[in-house]
Image (cartoon, rainbow, N blue to C red; front, side, top):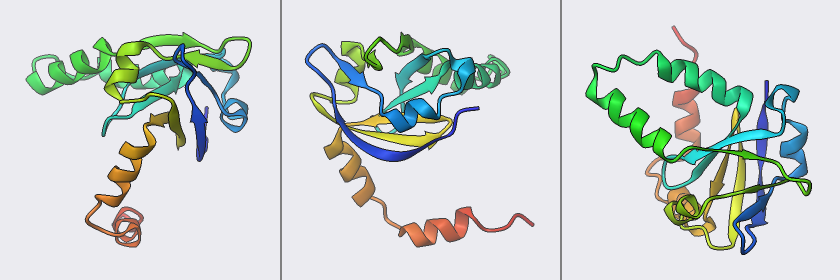
Length: 149
């Protein structure tokens, strides 16, 4: 099981390749086999799942009732953006142009470890997202970490 943490400031080269941070690579489970699934994320970022974590997500997606229109919309939207990428010899993944355009990534990126996945952000979009939150981190933490009754 992979467990990613931390923020890393990186760049995407002119061919759309991103070097995966060493700490992220060290947290990659052997089952992933240096293979990732890259797709559209939320709030205009990209999600990068190691293959083993993607398999878990895919299992839960397969269990969604297809009679529900929202489920069909979600699955179609997610999967139309999805591509399998492999670490190259220099520990980079190639990000397709359509995903770079979606996330408005030109050069600079923020790479976030978010437990089972990695998020890739345009720094300006990430900072705008963080400052647009109407509640404080402390208030959210108090709600999210509240013991379940």
